Image 1: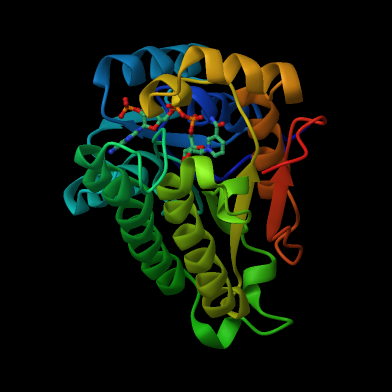
Image 2 (image 1 turned 180 degrees about the vertical axis):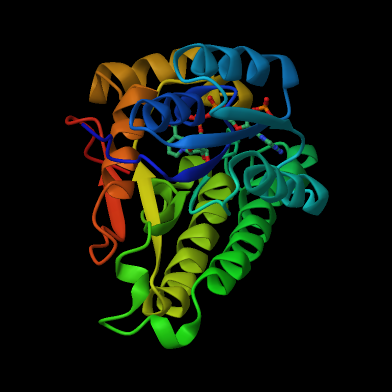
Amino acid sequence: MSKPLQGRVAIVTGASAGIGLSTARHLADAGARLVINARRAEKLSVLAAEINSTAPNTCVPVAGDCADQATIDQMLNTAKRSFSADADLIIVNAGRGLAGSVVTSDTTQWDEMLRTNILGAATLIRAAGKRMLQAVPENQTGQHGSWLSAPARDIIVIGSVVGYHVSPFSSMYGSTKFAVHGMVEGVRRELGPKGIRVTIVAPGFVVSEFQSVAGYEDAWFSQVKDKIGPPLAPDDVARVITFIAAQPPAVHISEITVRPTRQDYP
Ligand SMILES: NC(=O)c1ccc[n+]([C@@H]2O[C@H](COP(=O)([O-])OP(=O)(O)OC[C@H]3O[C@@H](n4cnc5c(N)ncnc54)[C@H](OP(=O)(O)O)[C@@H]3O)[C@@H](O)[C@H]2O)c1
């Protein structure tokens, strides 16, 4: 029996840990071929070897900063060269948090966070969107167009519940996700009519490397877990992403929030 993502070519950024790593595994299980990205080359190699040991020659790592145009071009070119097809499933996942608010957070980390979360997402969406537009001529994107029988084309972006709900405790990080949510909705309205699905996935609390990278205090996060737990695991979000991508081309789950059941806010 064919798998739900058989024939698809995916790019996953931030695949060395957390949601991106789980998503790469789930997409591979569902039959997709993959280009995976993050800065830590050794972690990517381990994941690629794991996936290739089950499905040979289906996973290629591209290490580098997800906001560099050169890395983005390399991801897209590697997909085409390795799998003889342009990527049709882009998971814009790499990102980082930052403990504290606009008033209290460490300003020396602002540049990196804004660059990764906003500019990195925008640059990849732009580059992938342009290639996807070239793949199907506009005169074939009407309601009876050939795009319906081709593989679906997806750009799935990981936002956050703090991209919907103003949270004073992480207002600088939250601002980056508000920007991403606005960007994704704008691009959805632009590319959706051309047959390209642009989706925002907004997770609540997920236990990953996110908390230590952001600099959350253990005591604070323990309190959060007591109040809203159990928190999500990366697999919980990866399952949802895979489900979205597996819908038929004319069906678009454009926006989804995944929270731990007991998380009331944000
Ligand atoms: N965890 C949560 O509670 C939560 C909730 C809502 C939304 N999110 C969002 O979900 C996404 C994934 O977070 P996560 O929880 O999986 O965090 P994570 O475990 O820290 O993973 C982040 C991934 O992004 C990569 N990355 C960071 N900066 C990068 C850069 N400049 N270039 C390339 N890769 C980069 C990291 O790899 P390297 O360090 O190897 O580069 C890592 O693979 C983020 O966008 C985050 O904002 C997380």
